[in-house]
Figure 1 (tube, rainbow, N blue to C red):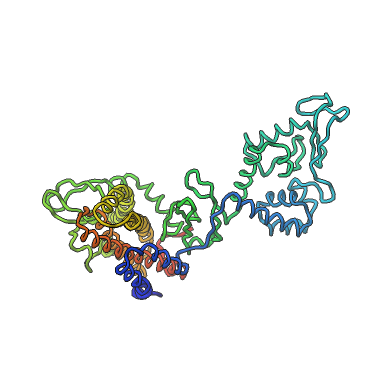
Figure 2: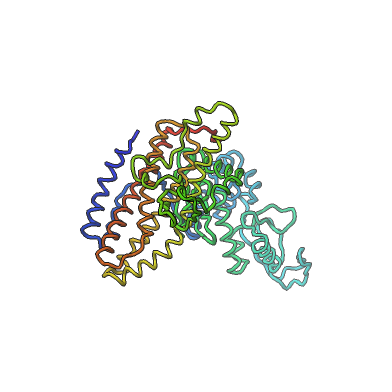
Length: 509
């Protein structure tokens, strides 16, 4: 088991060079930070994944189809139809095909291997009557596939148009004959429909390919057309949180497609959200935006992400979360993130236990909701920060690129707020052990560092160039430290999940 000091030795050694570079050559900080990131190996809490566009998806399908075609000796069109019937499960396809090839071909809607399956076009056939439009003029092009059910070209094209554009079908478009189960293949569709309709058809094929594949998922961001490939099976979701980032910058969990919820596993996220929904009235009450000053009882409204509050009336400084004196936040006395389990253990009667159970839930929910609320307030900080960046340029010799450190600091703050939010959902379900103490220590350190960075960002800008330089250095150093604390927490929690050292008081099933 790794201790906090182990992580600090490892990370601080690497990050000290970062600190040194930022102090001596602060102008090159951003570039060096990128180089530093590239040198880092994949962390325990990170997973391998690939973002795919429509062309990538088609290439993957073509590769799978080509492989099946080569092994079974079938055409590319028939192999594609078989794969889509078996929802791209090649092992299942090969197993059943080897047992009974003719039966599998028939079930999948493919003509027998000995039959020519190609698209057939004919013109001016004698005594031909289209069964769809009943036209018997004989002066028209006609179409059929290997089943020999022939229809006029116009009707066949209109049939495909309706299936694709109106019904959204692509995988299982059958022959227009009412009792025929033969599938109209991609090549036939391309020859008959216009380019717009075929593009829609290809898009639908891509969608079914992703939907049928356990290791592919669409990015849930609105209007995003990317898919993500991640080879994490559903059985591993109790030991890993597979967070991925799409090319559109949206971060989400590959397991449940909810927004990034590291370090909390999917099963606990679902339980937590359900509990919050069931206790909605209590949650609404506790997450109110106004509280009273602990000293003079004046009503105070939170209008920023930082939890360091100062009463305008009596100047008393306190913590918005626990309402305790702020002087203790940043010292060894900091226990804002911990729930006192002693009173719970001493409770005897059911009424007292129920009250303590509610208090425990409110302890974690209050902090969960507060970080969620603070992250939303920090979104407003982006606007203020951009204004501050412009002021900084005007009152110092810093370029626009050199003042980007402020925006990066806000990015880190918002990311840490999200991480901290889910640490409280995770901690709520943890059984009290020595491991829990370690987790809460990491949680506390990240929370303190995040609050300090948030406070730095919300300070008014002093136009003195010397003070701007000091502020820049302080923000750079604190940003690196906050990122370090987040990595330590996520790394240790992820290793704990893999090693099975976290125990919960609820069943994960």
